[in-house]
Image (cartoon, rainbow, N blue to C red; front, side, top):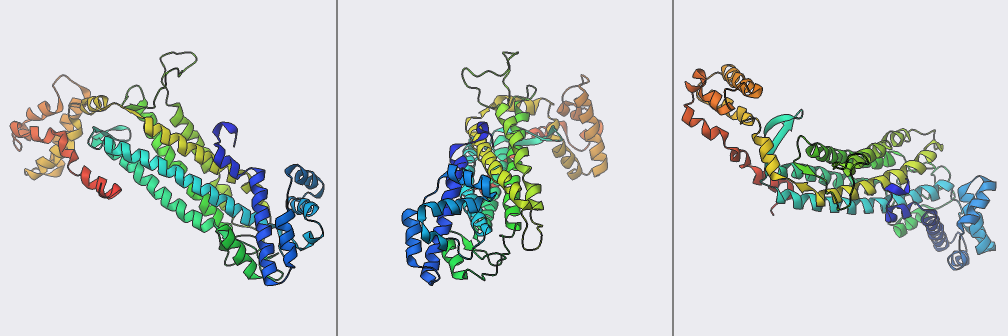
Length: 434
């Protein structure tokens, strides 16, 4: 991922220094286990711990000749360790190191992403309660539907990200597997106890049955989970972008002093942060299909997945880390305009209460079809703004409606507070008891 969309802690996970440090720990733990098992001298394990070092530039130079990254790393280690380096990597294959390292890196990345989600969830919770009873119009197809509250909107997004967090916890557990089972996973030249020891030291679980690699369905689920979280981010970003439109103006991103919205038009205040999150979500989702295609590999392994993962693992995790942090800041600083929400809610003269009138007419004895027709003809007249007055006044003047509901009784069906009666119930379902 380019520096513009990278944060330091997540980027460090994918830096060569961290990768080779994990490789070193895998080899050192494996050698410790082999020494305990009696298959290598204890002096070899001690030599690796005491003298083992690596130099990134030297590894790169060796790889240019060997065309093999793990061999280049082991060769560089041997230059420091000396003769006892011959015991390093005994019975192991490159994927024992590579796949176990990737598991460590993805769990490290998942821990950061979970912390990012916690920050976003905290922001959504705080703002949801702040606007719990703030009326606004609900929209379906982008068209006014019935009243809701801005707090309910935010509560819905909170619930979605809470589900995403649970999925990521499961994906983290599923990806956290260690493979030290040798060339085709049979443990022919390295004991299962070595894998168990390394797994414990690295906070992983032994892969129950591996080939030369960890099965890639685990990775596919991990990246699919990142893709779903990215889609949830876009869902929230799109809502904010719509609410900031000039014709709506119910909420907007914080516009800092000195900030500029356009090189040409000084008046512009654009939802650029939410648009940025939308774009990043597309990139993150782009990792999902390649990860799914990596599941199908030839026999015990091929390396068609390797190039894919070298790109998508850092890019998807770094991108999602940045997008989650950006969205948390957007929500924390979001500027909300309750007065504008109320003005938009009232802008169609009460049409948002059409269902309440429909139901009242059916309860008063009208057939549903006749009631629908009566309400709709008055609603369409009000929609067209033909000068006959607001929706309620048109209904009062309609003889068929008045025959079932007296004009004086119509008013109670236009009280927007009616739509708030179960907000507390929904909040308890989402947040539990406050």
